[in-house]
Length: 252
Length: 308
Image (tube, rainbow over the protein chains, first blue to last red):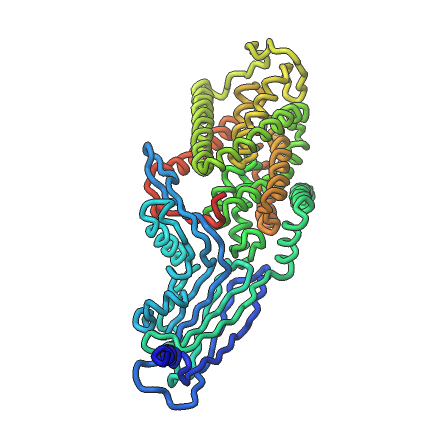
């Protein structure tokens, strides 16, 4: 009993450690308007402690920003009778539409594998794909392809050493949200670590919403599809007539 | 100037979209094709999702076709009676096409099916038109300016069919069955390929029905307005993939291009017009064929949404 209690205390004490996280965002709402061209979010924070920083491994900070997740299908082309066509496919239950990781140092140096498994920090950890090995041979190749394609499109980003940390206390980083944002809640997670172990974490939300004309058109298209379709046609018909009328006017 | 498109959910340069609409509208006015077979691949190329590209492309084609048809109407170059007969067949064909499309989607090979249809039909029709118009051009050159006069009466088996009708604007007195069948075939293909079908309709009217080239462009545009209008509404209801803002920018460029194209087409000879259209159609077909035959740089594709 006592042994178990000591063990529990030993497990809890690093988490209880006297270092805690305070943080803030430059904005917690992003409005997508017609001229929206991406947005930059400043994420900042500080480490609160009642004693001087402990000896040993240096403090590290990891910041992740995660967009809304969707299910998706990854297909692979194969050559059949001289033609390249989609043959095998794998279904992923949920993968974020956007994911950015910013750190103070190289990820393997500051984050242990167990902590990564527990907190889902690196890209392979945030892609939820259960039971894909039944769907196709070498299923991990498909997940690697997803990671590669999204890194190429800048939908996924790893920015090591982009978090500035001063005096093991104050830190800040900028995360650029791209222009092709999906609507939804973006989850910002902050971690402080020492020697690969997570000391404290915090979670915040950024609400990304369409606004103005974008909001109006999107709602109309989904709530009144027939009306929207007819309006689109009327717009097309009017534009077609107006152009021909305008050219006739110019000529005479 | 970047602009965020609410349905496509991407941000694209507004002037690029205006220019794209302009080029396609120009070709549409010049050749009497809707331009769907150009606009859809181009939109995909600049990063618009496939569903939005097909549906919004159809919407843009409506506008450029109306703009073009108004010019042709002033020249009395639209055979409305023929257009309506084609349209009747077109709706029937389109209805069947939608069912086949759903069936191929369920089989999971719709991409391949669409690409193969493009290569096959664009290649076949482009090739036929190219040969015929090249021969006509050569003949005209060899015989001096005197091209053979098109006879208005070549009696073939087509003229033996029942339900004859007078098409005054085309100077034809033929059965309604061949045009209705052609309309149905075009409607079927347009439902599958997401295009108006002008590039099939124009040569079919010239070579199969023997209509004079003068009325072919206007009549084709007239029919395309309704087929693509129908497609737009269907897509808006079924999948909410019509992006009005994207369509507006494409249309703005497109209607201006269509006017210029329609005016310019009167300066070119019919044979020249046909050979240019043939080259355009063959180029698109060749490009899609290459995509199928060459090893793609990235073997994997990611599509949002779960398999049914």
